[in-house]
Length: 376
Image 1 (cartoon, rainbow, N blue to C red):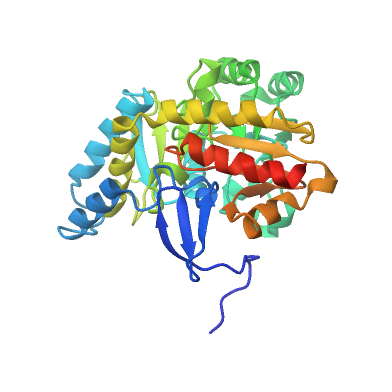
Image 2 (tube, one colour):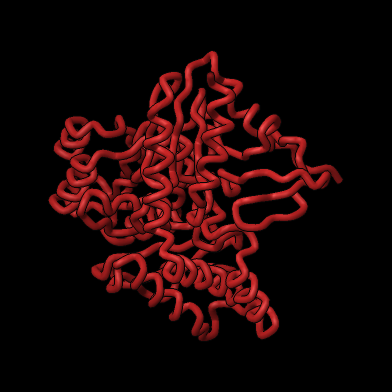
């Protein structure tokens, strides 16, 4: 049997990882500023994380949601404390797409409506409804297509108001990334998020804050949407939540009253997933990683703004987009194969930095030195 060939692969096999470094099969060391797509939030093979998982695996690795799992309660309490949403409710699942899928389903149960507002440049996942609200027709199969999704320009308050004025009583939810990841590290404006909140309140629609990539402390705030000073009804999260272990969740406002069978999952919230997620939150608290993400991120952004060759620097904390002109399109590849630094990308020429939240200033300087050589 062959693998289904859907991934363009770099010819690199990672065999060891620690902190913000990985090593390949030839023992070449790399600086990891991508974190496997914003997943590695507390560094590779963090000792507390490894111990938490190992200890749990030696007790019980899995049982389903048909029994009490105290680790789920502990995770909900810790997440409420660290995120500042203590009165919210937690539903655990397995991936970002699944989190968004459940959030949209929950919203529709809540107000009985079908129409969803999403935005240009959005990426919310690859499952049926999540991909329907994703702005990439290439990955939307015919079976995923629906007339219930309204795509509007990102950060356009006039278009948003006009749509609500015309169809407000039919709109189920608005789903938005606080900072678009795949869309090129584009941040929703403070006033735009506030406008979403006020219109959702006025028309009893549900504000879904997709925090799968931009959340979990990456911007220096727990949810990037917190910058706007308003609360969403549902926050979705995944990537950095388990530091590589598949775990995701939705944080749900108290006005939503659950009923048995409304949502469900076999693997979501299993013992190992909860142990991984607790290890992440405990490390974030103990090592003050939100502050570190803000400080090291601000340092990187400040230094990158000194490069005249860069078209635009976007982002917040350790979610940074570097837009380059066409003549510097080679930089990402050269960072990897000449300077051994992993970064991400967004089309056409945006380098994405999504490192661990405990990235050091020395690591930042290592990247800046390599970047300087490539763009001069």
